[in-house]
Length: 247
Ligand SMILES: NC(=O)c1ccc[n+]([C@@H]2O[C@H](COP(=O)([O-])OP(=O)(O)OC[C@H]3O[C@@H](n4cnc5c(N)ncnc54)[C@H](OP(=O)(O)O)[C@@H]3O)[C@@H](O)[C@H]2O)c1
Image (tube, rainbow, N blue to C red; front, side, top):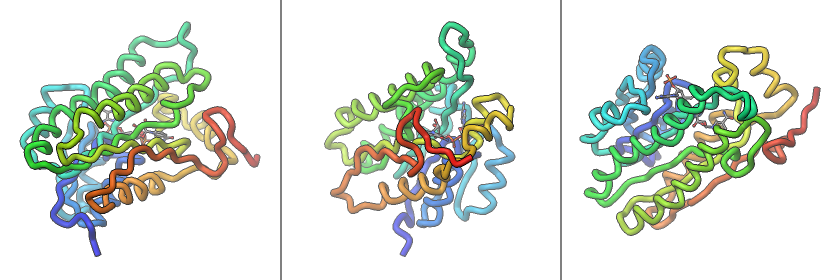
């Protein structure tokens, strides 16, 4: 039986990859899902497949736009998944514009969403928040500098949120994936598909559906259960830098 019937869920970054799959998984459990991201065409295509869903064209970097779009809605679940990596240069060659975009999206974007949805959840004395961190927040890798730092910030934010929201009825979790095959690497390499494919070459990588299934599991536990941190590796990935490849 569907376990999220009647619940309202927010998924940011629902236009692609992990967010799209989370939206599908929550909708399959009966939730009405608010799909948020910048690319309206992709959101609308997904929205047409998910009964009861709604699409919001939203840039999570804009605090006013986020507050305006989300504050008044009675969300039961919020998955602030929108995020990205840009470039893989060492700091001495890095692009400050890329750093700003990662920091503004991966850290401040998550904060903007949390600021908008948590007061209502506290008032209603219930809610589920699942952050999407990364193993990159636990182990740095060459050229990962700012992306790794943003995901370490997400992990720290998770720990802090547990204090902020303790005894409010809200459960907070973080799901931290290793290598998942999505457009993530194509975004990192700014559309260089060949370079992006090399990241996954010869690896039995995770699929975005795997992460969505774990998020679905986390939010469908009995009310007394709060799964805290879930670190998810593909069987082939030993660490942020050690991956078995069959080439
Ligand atoms: N793939 C991996 O290996 C991996 C591993 C660990 C963690 N993660 C994390 O998983 C999350 C999803 O990544 P993914 O792999 O699914 O990559 P993806 O397919 O590129 O999806 C990223 C999503 O974030 C949205 N987004 C980016 N900037 C945004 C902004 N300013 N405002 C609103 N939405 C924005 C994008 O939508 P628009 O472009 O339409 O706005 C897109 O829907 C990220 O937080 C990422 O750090 C990924």
